[in-house]
Image (cartoon, rainbow, N blue to C red; front, side):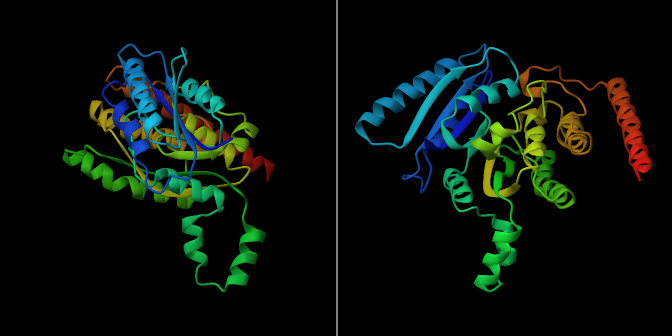
Length: 311
């Protein structure tokens, strides 16, 4: 079995996919880690598949001359939707750890090594910083008695093309938003552009909910948190800002803030629709949003009422 599998869902990504793949072979301190990269073509209509095939052929020919510990695999998933694509890729994965990012992302040079270390040594960077001043024996006893196993890790995403004032502000707010969410819920929420999970626990929780068109990553995180710890991954992934450029207000209010809170409170997304980069019409639906908010408020009232009756 390989150490790590990296799954990349791809739908109409011919402009971005090669930069993503190149970043996964330009990894520092990963020469002793055996990993594979699985690209899942999600029934693309552009030249995504051809671009990936050309890259794999070039890489394999180069690999014959220079030894490499990386393997590439292209598979297809005809059912459109990121949940279907990730599920197919994760099921195909041979690694003990399955990591994932998006086709328009560039991973940092230490991404693979950092993921490997977290799971190999059960190492939580934030937790160990807190414990570092304790005597070694006490520190070891706390870790053994208190810690649950690490089942997943997730980290920051930043835009590499924040060339407007609004995008620069969002780039600075992302760590603040994630930090507040982690503080109130005590564990990080998985983000599809930058997370990794133990394969055995992924199978235990039944994988992704393929009924979700968005938020399949958040849903998986909620299920995994019942079995162990989700920890902070101190390795940034840089993403395209195209989803935010098409409709900044919708991307922030619904896909980022609204769906996050809805998942944490109700276990489902606020609006279960395809994201902006997958062809959704670039407009807001005020009436639909108002109706959704009304439904959420009523559901929250019912939930609070039921909790009161139980007491």
